[in-house]
Image (cartoon, rainbow, N blue to C red; front, top):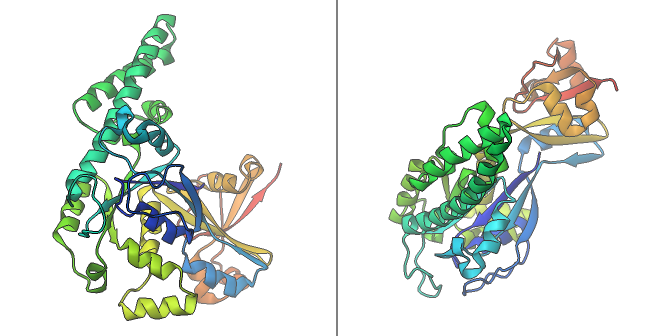
Length: 366
């Protein structure tokens, strides 16, 4: 399962700078609106120290981490839902993402133009949220008309879809986001099929001044954004895009020295990627052997057959058992044989819920 995140925000807030740092690419990051017109896509490896430990134990020919896909989407502006600033095109690009990373400017810089006239993170965040909501209302109104015609067929599913769209339309017309709509299990698939923008989880990234990171202090704009995010039921982290881009281009040995100099335990971008995993309720399991040690991404609470299906549909279709070794047991005892000799390798059936960090060998027959 790939994690796909769309990076959005007003123009000149640091989206492309952060994207460049994430992907070590060179997307233009200039001081004028709509510098990014076409979306840029980058694939980034998920930082996971456990892969290194497993590689030491199995000494595989190949190590394959999980990946995250980032889409750098052009700056949205007031009126984007009505087509301002190529808004319709940009909003369409957001629909491709599973989660939204909303970069909000929390730093002052007279040399960088702010399209709204000055730094106000809550205003900026709410502006984008409003544009996403207006776009959803437009989507729901169109689907309402179509669904209403469908009810004439007398098909139960058509009536269910119409009822959900009607309730969602009322909910969003009251100013609520689609993600706050309470849906039961039968309704959720229909809601997902609508691809509503405000149904996607949002990670707010406060792009702060370098001194806030290096001196570990929090400014008022960042605090206000964190409060706003919590109120909306979303996550918020902070980083300095400029600093992260400087770190990203350094050789590994210099990168460690740079982080140590500024009292940083890891690049802020690692926090961003892990926060994206948390936002989408994802976790990782591993397959290990002399040929390859590999990380796989699954939804939390996924069963063993569902995890097997991430590798290949045949694994899920012909699932028999899953031989599960806990990562901590493997590292503590030092080898797969030692874990098995200690009786800690367990055979699990179809009902087993995979835990984060499980090392699994699947038994199947097709």
